[in-house]
Image (cartoon, rainbow, N blue to C red; front, side, top):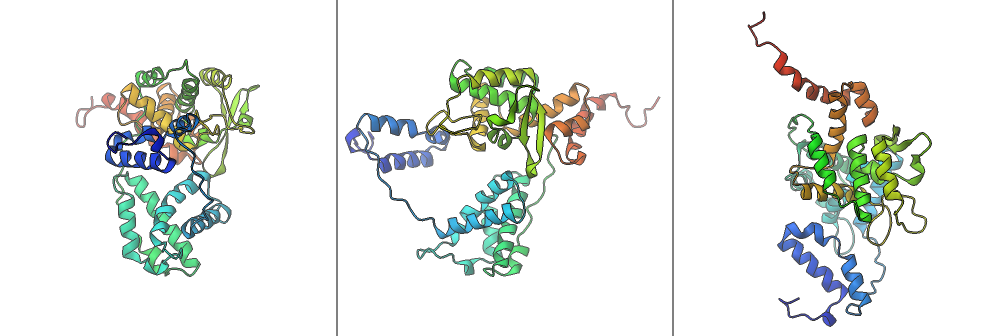
Amino acid sequence: MLTENLKLGELHHARVIGMVREDNDRYPEHRSANQNVSAVLRFLIEKGHLRPTEVPDAEPSSADECAVAWLRFLQVEQGQGASWIYKAGRVAAPFLALLEQPSRELAWERVDVRMANEFLQNAVAGYSSSTAQCTAALLRGLLSWAAANGWVQDRVALGILSPRWIRSGLPKGLTAGEVAALKDAVDFKSATGRRDLAVIVMLARLGVRVGEVAALTLEDINWSEPSLRMVGKGGRVLILPMPVDVGETLVDYLRIRHAGPGERGVFIRSLPPFKALNRGGIGEIVFKHARIAGLHDMYPHRLRHTAATTILGEGGNLRQVQELLGHASLSSSITYARVDMVPLRPLAPSWGKLP
């Protein structure tokens, strides 16, 4: 405002949003804070410095309509789960936006093997090999669906390259000290802090995914057993026992939970609208407190690894890891066997030095 010599009375809704977007482009490190501007806008409106702009309902674009149709196909025809459909939407939206013309038609004739692979290369830049593989599979699926509708040739989907697979290292869990530091970073005296602590404890102790926590409802909590009902990948229903610390932090939060009318989600946004957090919001809770705790290379899935490695460290077996993490088969849990072998290597005699 000082740079442009703007006064409060000269602000309008679109200008505020534009200023935030410009600041995000100029200072990417501010992006997380700038995603939460609703409280500032509400304050300006209440004080009479900003009038809410009446925006007419816009018709969905052709790209939006096409994306919705494909996601519905994935859900209804293929029976894909919420996690896969969420990822599919993140691939379809930017790809289809490239095809939309001023006339609102989609220029499918522009899609060839080269164009699709160039999009894939840009989309996966900076991401892990597993994410790149997933994105390639989703793009291949979108183009196969488009071919079935007669919009592109079959060879386009067949020509999508597979990104190079880089074998990942061992699953990296947190130490007990790092988990304690993550919890200590939470201001548990505030309502938001109680919510965040309950999320972190649930992720670390039960090894659930962020999407499973985001989908948790009040009806999924069984206080008499006590247990939690989680819906995992592929719609698999998991009944997980509720450890004492999970139950205590959950009760502490639910006592002050404030939700909108009819909202049954457990973990609620701290700002209006008071509806359930999505998977991105759950993940941001972990990122936020990891930064405060000084934990680098931190992502929510490390808490899932932490739960698995803790079981093995306390004498558990891979079958118990499979049951807790909700893996469809034991083969998905085998990777943690490599983690369990690490402390055994110093005990193995060197080659040629057998007694």
